[in-house]
Image (cartoon, rainbow, N blue to C red; front, side, top):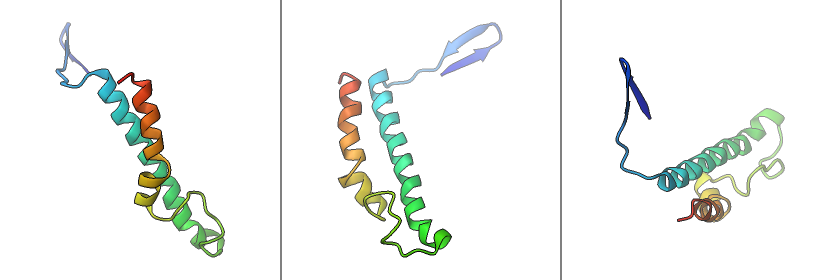
Length: 85
């Protein structure tokens, strides 16, 4: 993050290197995407008057089941390897 003060540019001190930021942001974005799709799965019966078993977008209606057993746990390894850690 860059802070502008008058004519000087001061960089804020961040204790993490870019690999830690990359992995953290990648996991955060994957969890955000899964929360949106899990919410869409749970709200589908109220919009389309269907039973919950029919319109699945994710593997489960439980957010923690999806992130811990299906997508983010697999995606974490990819992001970690891309960061070169």
